[in-house]
Image (cartoon, rainbow, N blue to C red):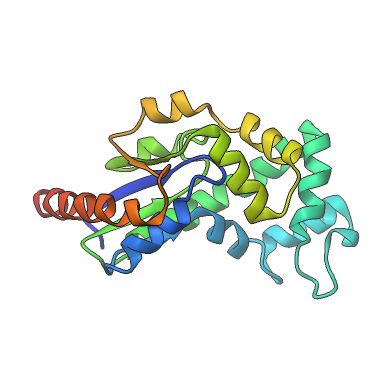
Length: 201
């Protein structure tokens, strides 16, 4: 089991995955909340069956997997359905992530979660790392990556905690305004720091 857990977060389009990939290349295990959120609704899962019971089979795509985009559109327009879905999935996701951090074998591991602060997960980790980016750059990167329109991305950004709030809980910050070349040295510095902290844990 990893002796030390670092929670990683950042707004949509901030570059969390790029950062966690750099840590993973150093042999550090990454528990990714987005990945877990997909795993818990895989075909045959109890959670997927409950979602189908609630929303009907039209919520599935041709492969009988959850049509996440369709579901997102439905719950975005109906707060009570979003609450229902969160109440169903969040405990399962939290439990699965906890189990995966307990099974991690690298000296420290990362728990990467877009909603680390919103869901109070930052209280469950030993240290919080925020990937920070200017909001205008965040918007343009997210639009490009998700092939979405600006309005959709702005709505997602508005639903997440503010950049200021996110930074207020950070123990460490990676500045991702300057692109990939500037990330590696920051990751290396933090990696060394986390190795020392994990040794002492």
